[in-house]
Image 1 (spheres, rainbow, N blue to C red):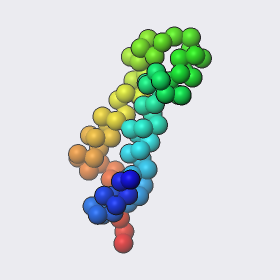
Image 2 (cartoon, rainbow, N blue to C red; image 1 turned 135 degrees about the vertical axis):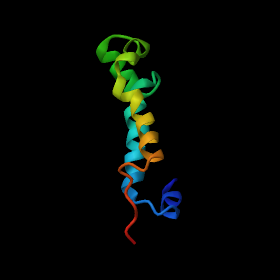
Image 3 (cartoon, helix red, strand yellow; image 1 turned 180 degrees about the horizontal axis):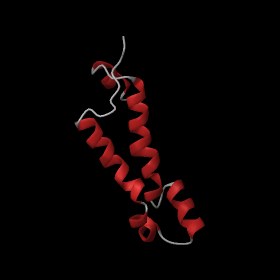
Image 4 (spheres, rainbow, N blue to C red; image 1 turned 135 degrees about the horizontal axis):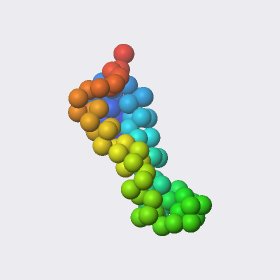
Length: 80
């Protein structure tokens, strides 16, 4: 869905892959009705709201992604 936008801005596909991983996959355990959230909640035997504050990496990751993008840190440019 965002492939064209990344190409138009001259960004390498690795940036899109990393962004999707940082914002989608990592945060999925924080959504109670998601399969990841339901599984983690079931395994831990607690509600998502009880482990949310301890999952620092999971909720901090999207903010770090925005920070890195804003300051062009580790943003790979397209070679062609």
